[in-house]
Image (tube, rainbow, N blue to C red; front, side, top):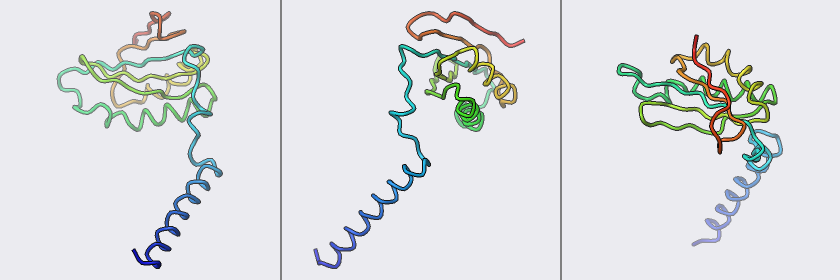
Length: 139
């Protein structure tokens, strides 16, 4: 490897490193350790969509904008964040974690009222290790 090529690789690596530092310093990405809640000390909201014949094939694509809006609404309210999703057995579930499941649903409900798919069940948990303490069905 020539000295010139080695120097270019070092400069490129330094640029990548510095740009990553700038992104973190400017708060453009979050440090996962700062935003991760202790699961044992967290409330959960699980929003379920029943996938019926004729439903869009890829729920994740159809609901992506809604998921992002829900996560942003929770974070803006300092109420929680999205934790993940699961697909299977004809259902698509979205998991949200925070410190007050009732406040989280209060923030999430108007977002999901505008979703392209209608939710079929919402479960409120004090901990995922136990059964939900409340199950909400659409009106």
